[in-house]
Image (cartoon, rainbow, N blue to C red; front, side):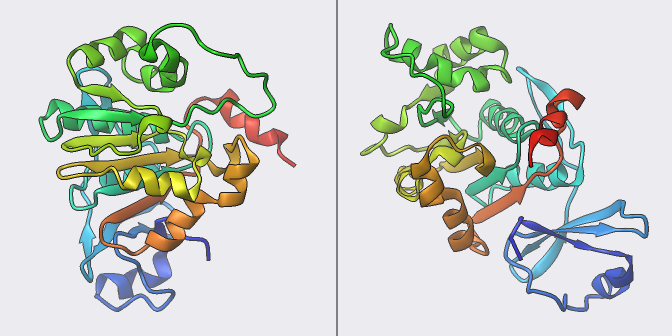
Length: 273
């Protein structure tokens, strides 16, 4: 069974679960979420399996002065927000199709942690890959910041636009590092945020993980269906990460399934075969 980072306990098994009877199906992995549902499939409780025990989760909210408060809109977002707030899990991965809120949650949550003083800054990493089957624009003018700005705009969309990004840069709360310049870096006291990680090979992910130094966490998001090159499809970087790290006490993962952006954005799935 494909690992999604969570599992469901339905009405027929709830009494056993609440009484402490071990789950008989595939063993629960460390940091895996458990969603308890009633007879009509509505979530009634949320738990996370940690250190051999199921820990009940509190209602999560993310928020900061740039974006305001973000609340979960579906069960998977409920789990993902709890993961982002869990300081015992320094390597976090959130995947899902377009519109599921993976990048928005990461950005809102990361800004919250920086504004609370839990981290010095956000270190933003994104492979500078254009959408497949489009023509390359050629060399971009300007300094390093101006060259990476087009790839930074998905971040800007959730923190006040270009002015919000510039304000974070001026205050030293945001650092932008192109993937090509990452080798040799040692990044401390930072949330290292890798956006659109579907465009990373296994070796790229190893490179990023190897930059995490004392006091830092690695947050990654991605959509495997939106890969923009055969090299990423062949390497299966994200799948390898999930397969190898699932169950590790320092790794957490949630796969989002419901688009919350808009009705039109959700219609995009209708074009699939």
